[in-house]
Length: 161
Image (tube, rainbow, N blue to C red; front, top):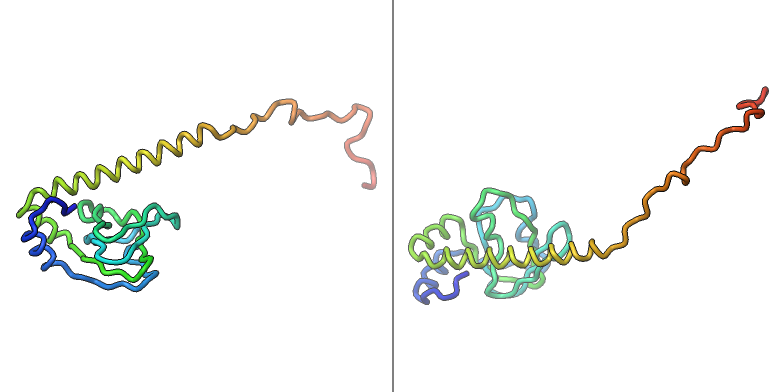
């Protein structure tokens, strides 16, 4: 997201961000939680997971949590550290101020979100193809559940039973 930006601007931006250390196996973001910050991995790796299913692993230089910075929706995924990690935390207001100062950040954010949408579309298409190749269950045939009537000479209940 911050590629192609001047070094002096990156230094200024980093100076207003908090650097936070997280132990291994620490959940930084919980799916469904409110949030107005995004994170940049400085060292270590994190796992992004939705409903317990890992969808990505991020390494230094990659970011997460950016969707909640732009909309008022709860977090769409959980993020847990795989190793001890250092992350830079950028709040919504800090990002908006940075975009005002350097509009190129907005273009990079759009590219990042667009790339992630494309990846999700590819994943969705793969799932659709797999479903199309999955054998369908046989329909229920009427002869399988046709009732058999009692013989007319047979009583429905016997006395004493």
